[in-house]
Image (cartoon, rainbow over all chains, first blue to last red; front, side):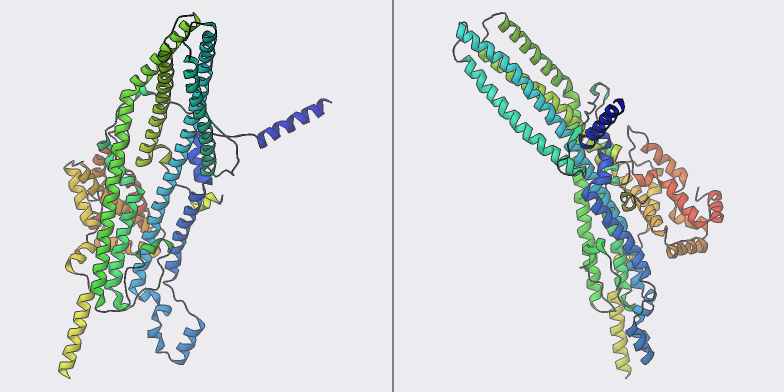
Length: 416
Length: 152
């Protein structure tokens, strides 16, 4: 009998684990996104393609023969000159430059992947914190509804028994109904955030996630930050900007390709990562169009320089915005906390007076209920906003969770 | 006949010249790691750690890392690098391309001076990148590198 009981209990425990909620914590969000996010997986495959293209481009420097080339050479050995691109592709300098381009493009693709991975981790962490904040707000609104319901009942009783101006209970009920609407809307919002989070973390739809709570910032120990101190790091580490640096190296190779195309043009593909350069004319053979081709490449470089400048200015602006909000929250934290504590003190005192039978001005009571909800919501929101800002700072500087490289496809497939 | 040859030669020359990069473009193509190294040395020796100064230094460290990562796993690229070192000698090679580690140390001190690291991974990883390069070049070159004033 004991054995049967033990087995049943064990089976129930296994079942509850298998079908129960999946617990997630903020510390393992980055890891989960790296392993299971669909976009990350897709982009890792693109980097893999770019890497494979380097090997392919290198292999394309070796002779590639087909039956027709061999046949034509047997008939007329002088055809070797026409077919030098197939028989000895390494003799065509443009091919060597093309191989270098492909290598630079692989590095650029890897930077693009790092940018996407960083954004996906940031988005998932933001969703996580937003879902937690909204859950807390939901709990807070529900608590406020309970508290206001008690006041509503008390006022209603006093209206019936005398001692309260008629219509007071109705005003409180209007506020109560407003809060109930807020609660319903928050429930919808939380459900949608949880679904989005499950998707970002690569869980099947319908997975019941339980979010572990997060540690709130220790405001007393933190100091303001100066955006200028980290401007250089933000620019230098930015994968978006680094991608352009690799593109400039590609453009230098394209220029060389044009300069040497008297020995024939390259037939080696730049691969998936090289699409943006495919419209640049490189030609094959020496011609009057080469000067213009050079000008087109030079203009492309100017375009990219301007785009890079745009990225730099955006990064500086973002860093300043983060620092301004961070410092503002840090210096105003005391106010937020004090406001919340005063509003609660005031509400407790009013409730005590009502319970003792004092004649309370109902507009004061109503106003107090509103300020308490606002003050507590503002404090909670500020705490989470501060955490979000810290995380944005980490993303822009590639610090903390972002201070590693995204996983390569081999490790995503469990081959490493 | 002579005129025909002249005309053909002039045309060919014209075509060749139009195909060749202009002086400015050539200059741009050869604005290489050597010029970037000189800028970096200037930044470090004057302690110009302004945003502009640091970006100049970054240009060198990024490019140096990029070129070394191009050589890794590419036997042909490695051969070229070895040929260059052999032809110029390690001292000349360092003079042209390598920021000595003692200079990097000063920059690294600035980078570590904030609450968080202030610089880029390329700067942080520079000694490792140098080691990777020396590993590729072999123990003899490494020994010469460690001895040479221009390099260390």
